[in-house]
Structure formats: C-alpha cells, structure tokens
Image 1 (cartoon, rainbow over the protein chains, first blue to last red):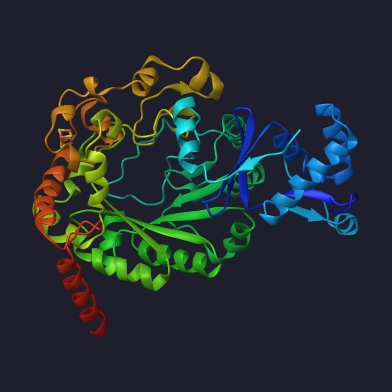
Image 2 (image 1 turned 90 degrees about the horizontal axis):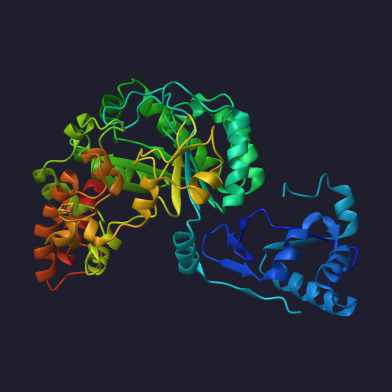
Length: 106
Length: 376
Ligand code: SF4
C-alpha cells in the first residue's frame, strides 16, 4: 500500500491512447500492450504526476459514485499492479516537491 | 467496481485499428527540400509549400486524438528545417514512438544532447554503399558518405537506436555484402529493400536503377528475404494479401498538409489546411479512400488469378505510381515475383529448406565466404 501523500505518474517509456471505451498502453519495447477498462482509464488519466494518491481516490469516488473504502482499495491495487510493471511511477511527497514540474502534457 | 488490465493484445490492437480506421502509424513529410540529389529519389517538390511549426503542432494534437502511436518524420531531408527540434520536442511531450527518417548528412555531434532529450526516439538513416565512391555517386553529393557514417557513429555513441536502410539498385548491389558487414561493425540494424518505386508524379525514371533479373539471381539469395512468409500468406485471398494498412491504420501527411494513404501512394484524400483530420479520415472520407478501404479480390482482375501471387510483394502504392490506379498488376512486382517463383522451386525441392528462404547449403557457402572475407 502506497502512502496517500505520494504522487502517481505515468512512465515516460510508453505511449498511450484512448481507444474506444478504454486506454491502450504500448511499452517502449513494443512488446507489451496493456488495455485498461473504464475505471482503470479514469485513474490512469488522473495519474499525471500532479496529484497525490488521496486526491485520485477522492476523484474516483465522485466520478464512479462508490464508497471511499472501495475507491481506496481499487486505486491502491491498480497502482501496485502498474508500478510493478514499471508503467506507473510512484514518488513520495518530498521528492515531488524538490522536482520541478512533475506533470506531463496530457 | 473493479480495475482490470490485460496484456498481449498486439494483433488485436492492429485488427481494431484496421477495422475502426484508426491511423496508428503516420508519416509526416516535413519538407520536400533536400541536401542530396539521389538518383532514385521518388520525392517531388510539394509546390514549395511547407506547413509552419504551429500548423504541424496542431496536426500533432489531432493525431493524439486520432489514436496515433507511431509518428515518423520524413522528407525530403528533415534536418533542413530549422524548427525540427522544436517540432520533435513538442511531439515527444505529447507522447509518440518517434522516428526520424534522414540521410544523416546534416547531423552533427553537437546535436546529440538535444537528440538524447527526445523520448522514445529512433533513427532510420539511408546508406547506399559501403564506399564513398558508390554512395556519393548515388547521392550526387561528394562527402555525403563520410558525413552519414559519422552521424551513425555519433548516434550509436549517444545510445540512440539506429537502423540503416539500403535500397538495392544496380548501382550498389555489388556492395550489398560489404554493407551488411559494415552495419554489423557499426552495431546497427541493417534493413535492405529491393525494388525501386517511380517518382510521386508517376515518372518511371528511378526504375532504370532497379535490379536486373540476373542481379536478383546472383545477389538476392544471399540476403534474408523470408519466403516462408510469402508461402504462408500466399494461400489467402489476394485482396487481403495485397492490402496493406495504408488508408485504414496508416497514412501520410505531405509537406503542404495533404493527407494521403501512404507516402508511396500520393492519392490526396484531404487538405489539413481546409479540414480537420477527423473530417478527412472519419466523417467525410473521399470516394477514393472509401474505395481503397473496401477493395475485394474482384477488384484485382489480374492479380487475383495470378499463379505467381504467392511469390509477390505487390505494394499498392507502387502500383498506383506505376499505373495510376490501385487495382492493376505492378510491372516491377511481377519481375521480382518471377525471380522468387523460380528460386522458390529450388528452395521447396531442397530437403535443406528453412524459413530464411535459402537452403542450409547456401547458408554454409555464404558463411564460409564471409569468414574468408574477414580473414583477408
Ligand atoms: S506477379 Fe504481377 S500479376 Fe501476379 S500478383 Fe504480382 S503484381 Fe499481380
């Protein structure tokens, strides 16, 4: 479980696009392709390096009208899986404050 | 609520892009200007009109929405544009797999820091000979070989992925083995192609440099043209075999903003200075684009009945340039299919056949020759 104060950021080593109802992610080696469903896509788009996990949880809560516990479990699980696959990066609050401009262009 | 993800959907993604007309691979010709004067070049001047940096950035934004993953910058020579890095930085920030297609002769060591900052960038450089004599004869610019090779070395040193591309012609085929060895030494991938396309205005002039049948027989078996691929797909409907992704999942943009199915198929399907990409590609596709997307074998009267179809790599773009239409036979593809057909008979009858398209025996001979060359 990641600290709620930490930031989620999409890796630079991939390209992603919204295709149909979800998000399709191609990794740099061109081999792995990940597709995210509606909920996963929404979390992915929020993970632009400017939001803390707790903000993503709260926005997910509002958008899908689910309890805080459910949103928290889903966001944490999603983050753990995608961080393990190196397509999401986790940065703690201090590191992010030191870094200049954490977000990407989308 | 559950969060799901799945992996390994490559083929499915491509199939979706083809079905839904998502241009996942786009080539942008940034300019028709070039510092070289290659004898076999297919490019024609695009009325001297070039999109501005801002117009190109706007198109890049549209491509993100269109679902484009792979974006190649080509020309002309892209390094003749002063704003190349500005455009590339913008595209890089938007997130694409970027390819720079270049002759490399304008690249300098000082550019490496800038190039290294571009995410997910790879280079494809054209090299036409293993010697300055041959390469410079083809490019008609003295010193171009030296500069291109220096650029390759600089890029490799900077850790950039490089593919060297060679069009085999009657002017350089005698150096094809040396080029292959040279690329190995430089530590880059070497991709060769055989078959010279006409110019975009339909002029067949460049094809005077295409290989003769004797050249094909003499040199081509030494290279890995994968005939097993031809045999496998040769069994399918020619309309499918001869349809590429151009017009569905791929397209090109000319220096002046004209959208075409491919750089090799200059069939204008819309002008980005007049309409959005979405309008041109999805909302109001031209009649020609619709026809290309809906081709069936019934539309290919000659090729659908051709005995050599299984040996043929028929590029719809080259057919278009050679004949002015997309459904006919391609005279240049016919010649190569004849060669493949005749060599395939030998290959198929040999017990040493393997997917590389040449027999084990042939491979042994080539290996021995290569070793001898290295020792010398
Ligand atoms: S060999 Fe010629 S006629 Fe036969 S399929 Fe190829 S292009 Fe068509």
